[in-house]
Length: 231
Image (cartoon, rainbow, N blue to C red; front, side):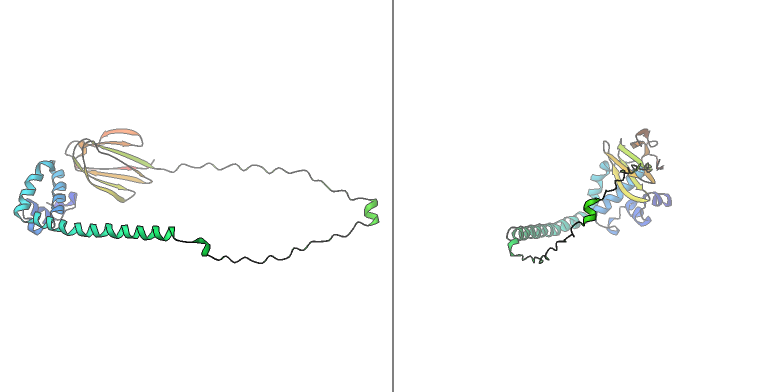
């Protein structure tokens, strides 16, 4: 029980309730389905085979009636939100098309009178000996050589599902995915430091790291965690 709780991150009371079928002590039906998916993946079972049996037990426990009541409550709230959004869009359109930019008064600054400078005429001495302008050779500024940009380290992990498997992905110490990977599904993540992959079915996952095909992560049904650092 300690090992199951550590791997699945489920409470011991939740695991005991699933084993006994005591669903009244658990939360809504949607959470119970999620708990069972995690537990089934750890045990190497297919949740699709267990789902009809679970629905039958949830119906006997009265959990499906609670779920249906919640859906009836959520539908009017969703409809009200859509109506409010449409009204806001209409108000914005009316404001934009009826806004008159000519009603805005711009204040123009007074231009100060131009003062023309009067230069004195040339003297007799300046006429007899005209000044010679000094010309200086043009100096070429050396072209700046751009510094070499050092490529930052990164790691790219691409995952493709071969079988139904639970999966948790952490990129640079931040969890970005936790759920179930079906056969044929593909995902990819990029990190600057490291990417950690943890799965309940290592043989059901094909993995590529920075373009290199590493094959499956492990054996079928094996609970495994691998870390891939940036290169």
